[in-house]
Image 1 (tube, rainbow, N blue to C red):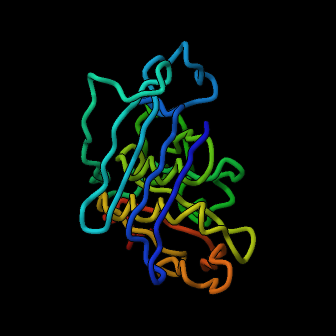
Image 2 (cartoon, rainbow, N blue to C red; image 1 turned 30 degrees about the vertical axis):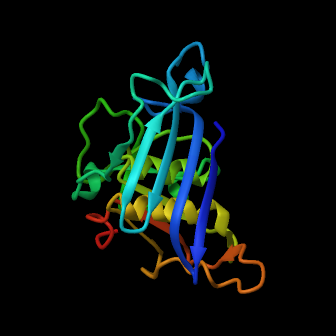
Length: 211
């Protein structure tokens, strides 16, 4: 999948953002096994957010490159309401495994949504592509949590800025692993790097303090 995101940052605060994913499956989590236009003829999503105005999305058709007439309206995006950790749906970076996340000490993971889970197991979703797809997944209510472990001291701001406002305006919360907000003004010269402690935690808000 490909995703393009743009954000307007003023004095270190994201005030507006837009991201689009032409290969996004409208009703299901996208997978590599079924990622063809033939298999998913109606797909693609555009998401926008503005501070104080919420997060909104609309679908478009890959075949025409235009917005669909049937769903030619903007729909309000809201995070899910899950407040129990082991009942939440998690996603992590494609390059990381669950045992790399500190939560793996407390919870094992499964990718089988059909089986009932106990309080020591969480559901891990297959959400491919980069970090912004995970932000989009949380903002649209398809996942409850996105956890990223930072392998280096710094991360690129463009992988997070638009996701931050889309999740926040949908009712979610974002911080580093110490609980501090992401500092998008930390790189005063290039405005390209952020320095989250440990990594990034993106949640529906209800789970943030617990995690």
